[in-house]
Image (cartoon, rainbow, N blue to C red; front, side, top):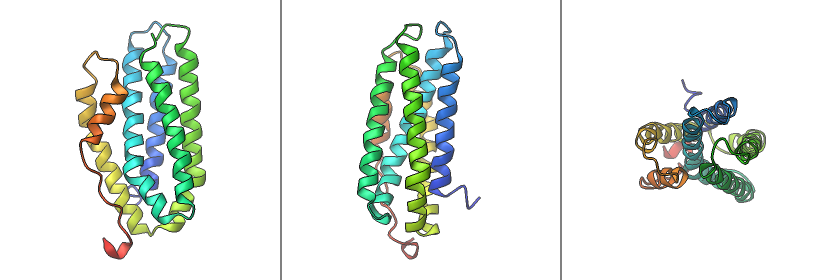
Length: 186
């Protein structure tokens, strides 16, 4: 259970959940009415992950990783690109000729982002932050994801197509917690 509370294992598991959610969208034919619902699920999973990273991962990387600011800037740039594609998908009919290429672009970006974090960012964070700090951050990521389950229910029913913005706004209503300085400060 100690390992589960680690921010790195939490976010790695989150990467897999997002990739699986996108694969479920891709596996359905364009005219399948479930495709839009699967896209909503993937969107909420991706926005939840982005918020958890903004609140917990990015401040920790800035604090504990040499050149952390540069790594975070790269992350934020890619996250914004993913969000743009997500918004395009929201306003594209699932059976249109534009949907599949947009979905493939999003899947590629999500995969690249996960690989970058798992091979470049996470190892540096593991070297720079103490295990107790990583564990405390993991608990905060899990708390963010627990709140997301509640939000999923509220946000998945309205017919409005601006799900990315509504999900982000809902997450933003709660305040982020500070990054612990060192294990002794916990």
